Image 1 (cartoon, rainbow, N blue to C red):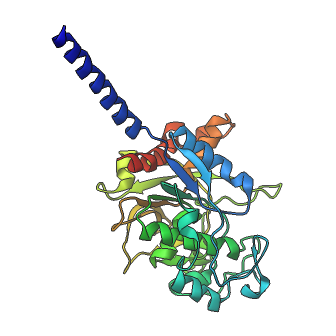
Image 2 (cartoon, rainbow, N blue to C red; image 1 turned 90 degrees about the horizontal axis):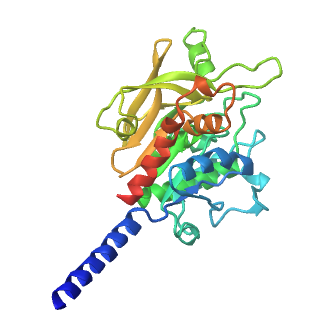
Image 3 (cartoon, one colour; image 1 turned 180 degrees about the vertical axis):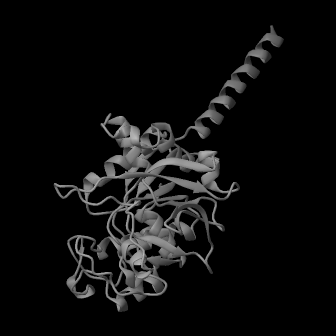
Length: 321
């Protein structure tokens, strides 16, 4: 009888141990979505995070302690006439980043962060500041730039896993000190080459743009990117951008994905060599997820649903490792 009790007790302890292991392995992972001013823009990313097994959380706006705001907007004194962050204030953001802010409390309980696509980044925040490209319809959002710069710097300094999507990849590059190309059309024009608009479609008759599919070459089999896609090529990524990372020379970044375009290798993926998970992709896996979930007429043009979700699952799995 005593022997049977011992066996039952050992089995019970084993069950409890296994349950604890399972709870730890499948504990909720809270994935923050970096603040931006358009609520509906979170939807595609939130759905992707949830499909990957995470809990999507909209992060609060991050503000330098010395800057003044009207509601959620930087006051006009910080901006030039084109809405670009003035150089003198960009230098403060780059120098002080998140120090002296309440970001520690605002980020409490966040396990990883996704940085979304969107408007251009103020070129005053670049390592080598540039004049704004001046293209109407491709303006900057300085308020968002400041919030994301602080959030990205905080995540990198604290080894919080990050995934940057399109603009999010560019913010990873800017905070890491990479150089930027503000407009591909201008870049090719300066070389006397007519750009083929591979990375962002022209407007249609109604004035709308649409995501365009193209392939990406994975150039490093030891990379995070390769561990996600398990292939030397990513087929049919949803693309919509006119800015790109120019060079990562002299930074902790490495290039892991490219798309050869009219004689130039356009950078499509970057990673921080000194961080456990800091990946940026110049395309939109979350858009592929949305189109497949919504069964759109163009869904078959892009990567499969499971492929889109895989980037978010890798981020979440890194937290669970």
